[in-house]
Amino acid sequence: MAEQLLAAEDLGKTYGTTVQTVALSDVSFVLHTGEFAAVIGQSGSGKSTLLNLIGLLDTPTTGRVLLNGQDASATSRRQRAALRNELIGFVFQFHYLLPEFSVLENVLMPGRIAGASPAVLRPRAEEVLALLGLEGLESKGANDLSGGQKQRVAVARALMNRPALVLADEPTGNLDSENTKAVYELFRRLNSELGTAFLIVTHARAVAQQTDRILEVQDGRLLQDERNSHLEWEPAAAPAGEAVASTGAA
Amino acid sequence: MLSLTIAARFLRKSPAQSVLIVAGIAVGIGVQVFLGSLITSLQASLVDQTIGHSPQVMVQSSTDGQPVAYGPALKQTLTSQPAVTTVVPTRTFSAIYRQGQVSAPLELTGGQLDQLNTIYDISGRISAGKAQLGPGDVLVGKDFAAKNGLSPGSRLILVLPSGKPAGLMISGVFDFGSAAANLATAFVDGGYAAGVLGYTGDQYSAIDMQVHNVFDSKKVAAQLKTQPAVRGLKVSEWQSQNSDLLSALKSQSYSSYMIQFFVLVAVALGIASTLAISAVQKTRQIGILKAMGMEDRRSGRIFLWQAAILGLGGAAVGVGAGLALIGLFTYLGRNSSALFPIHPQVWFIALSFAVGVLVAMLSSLIPSRRTTKLDPIEVIQGG
Image (cartoon, rainbow over all chains, first blue to last red):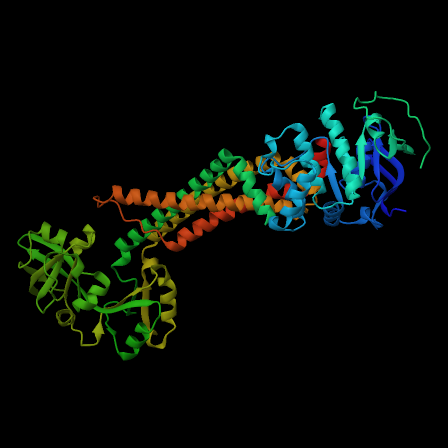
């Protein structure tokens, strides 16, 4: 059985002091090494909040996040930054590439933040870029790429430090159906070839069904945690409020 | 040095903004270098003209009109003071110049020409005749000579303090650059003055001194008063006798400091506001860098590095601009006796440069602090 990579224990997030808004409440689940899972839910359901909490970008109001068995919620900002750099790769809906840097420099950035020199990191960056079909674009500026290319560079950057977990928040939200399909196929391939765990936030059930496991969030609570039987690829987004066909909670 | 690399890239990405900040710092430091050097040189020129060729510390008898015995002990005490550059014993008396119906008072200082030169630089300021002080010779000022139709070789008839008349030969005419000094001052041989005053060989009216830094005269005078050889004598110095001049010099310094201070404040505010805008513009980049694991302090250093680069560039350009202004000032005044030469001091330029960099660095503290506190979630949630 795969090792436990991440555990969310009774995670909750409440915003505001005088008027309180509960964004997430009592969410618990475990993610294992090499898993390929999705978090689905409607807009405002709390799925991005969940991703931010387990990605150590935000701190929970209640509960805790265990990463490799370590209570990451109890660590300092500095330690959380180091854990993010070492263990987690992020892919967001917006690519968030640094326009001041070239494609290669953007991909090198997580390694440089870790303290390695560009010369040492370069072979790894070129390997990742080749894996994503981005050879020849190394010296291009981040703003000189197409939308699909930018998102692939963002994926390459997320993979640079060989993270154990990639957290992707609506990673294809700004892409057309062709690029959407390509990105998910890429995620699947990287998951198979590298053994990197993926947790992908999406509002589209059809997209989520390409993963092995679906965590459904509704009104800030984990509604279902189901193992998926793969369907044929359907790039069109699922309609909002679509009924969930449970295949059994994990 | 990732923070430095990122800082440099941020600056390169916004060249117009970077050039404007550098120009702002350069203007401030340029003004600082030019104005500071101008005021310093103006003061040096004023000091040189007013007291540079005068005794700055004097030892006299505590009883008016009585001589000072300049014996070995006193000589050893005065010449061994590290702050003292020149010690010249002088004999001074007043006389009335009389020529027909015309009469004018004269203050005659007697001494050895080579010693007098160390204070008054008489030989270097001769405008007619020659610098010579033999027995019976007298050197008079340009204005006195012109007013009375005298020139080298003319005979000067004086009425001495004893009431007796005396005749001296004008060997040279000097120009001290001051009409008052040129009208009322004259120099004679020390032996001749001793005879007029009735002094013996080691008796003098005063022991005149100059010091390394003219503004140390009070300290030197106070120190001398504690010396056994000086006990019972009167020690005076120029500052207590020229309070108006001192006040004017101080006022000039303070006004210069105020101008420089407010110029630097304006520069600091300009840099701070521009860097603050830059910090806001780069919030997304900083947020994503932090999401990737960049530590808070390291991200804050990005703006410190930016400020350092801008400060170094701006200060370097500013020093160059300041020196160019000084060069222009000197060039324009090359034929004008009304203008004085500006001598930029290396230490002052180095200080101005350092102040420029420091002001830029201090100006970056607010944006740097803001960056340090930025939570990546603010950027991620803000899209």
